[in-house]
Length: 343
Image (cartoon, rainbow, N blue to C red; front, side, top):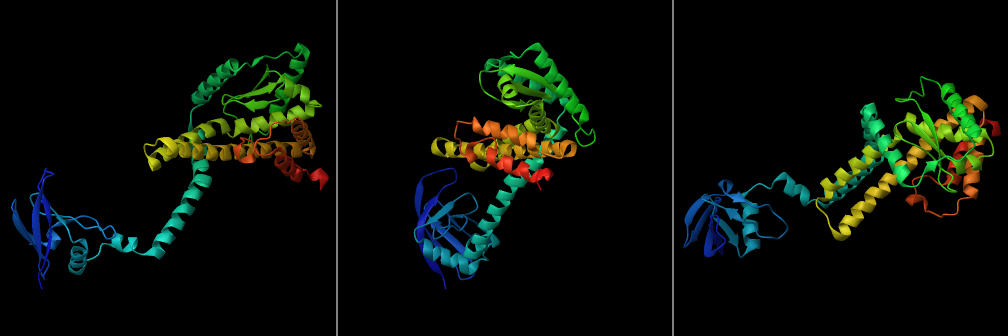
């Protein structure tokens, strides 16, 4: 049985509407009648818009004429009877599959950002040439100067002792398990009362005067040096840069051009994920230090004691999720688990 539905036609490259009727044949034949065109074809030869809920599907005929129906339900039912439903449409209508796909996507996304991105970043970071490390390190040194880091005010004799301790520590490392792309170097700097130690991409380990004064002995300074050498050996600085680049590019591809609240949310997501990666790098550097402290002294007490001193003088209460470092109490407990002298 034939059915007729009413609507309008849009001409090719023209937004003007023309009243039209469409005769729906019993064998899939479409006959379009309008003041601007009269044509017919089989359903399989017409171009149908995608089926989205109860919205009317447009039909494009040869010549670019587009029929828009005023009776979407009747047209959609007829099309469903005379055409095979695409697989994607069947999947979209299956609630169980939608839920399963959503859960699967969430799991894959989580695994990608928790495991995939860090693994990929490490591979890329270790493939980068030494010249990149040097350039990043030089830029970091310039930034330190701009931030007010000055030459150390420690006595020359004390500075010489620390340089000797640093060289001896590096020489004791196993060259097979602790290979460096560049020779590590110690740099002592002064910046007020801030006790700090960190590594640069080009192999520099920075110790502030306040950190030296905080340590009760050179064993504690050797322990923190080992931690920073762990960052250098595993190229954590470059890995962080690569991870941030991957996250930023991924966010741009997923979200597209953003503004306002969505832009802020994406920025916080990227920042939060980057901080999570940074905390993992700190744990890996602690593991590096703990391995050698156990091998040399059968104890991680020196690093534990320094962290306890840092914790006692730590006045800023930053939530763990917003910090680049794990909480000191967590790090101390982990180091104590490695300490066989206490077991």
